[in-house]
Image 1: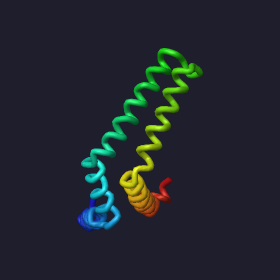
Image 2: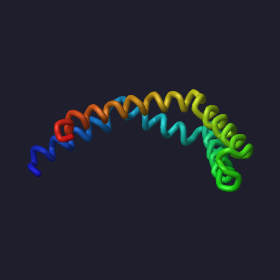
Image 3: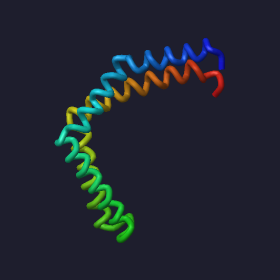
Image 4: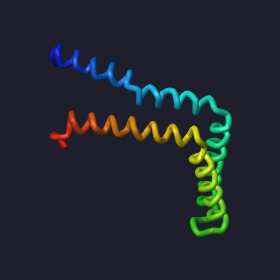
Length: 112
């Protein structure tokens, strides 16, 4: 790899690390991981997922138990998704994902 290419890649890396969208996402990620309410909602969703998996294994997909567990899982996921901090994080994540997709398309688009 040429020195010029290496320098350009380091420059791109630095620009991305300092991009306001990336910085905002990192800040929101930290806030999510420190927010007790979000952690409780995420835990409830995880436990509902485990319960649903157990119901599927023991009672089958069309059982009343599985349907009730699925309903609880949907409810727990919904409660997590509507939390304002989670919504803000998802919006910021979408912006960064679109940024990375654009870069990928520009760099590698003609190779696909």
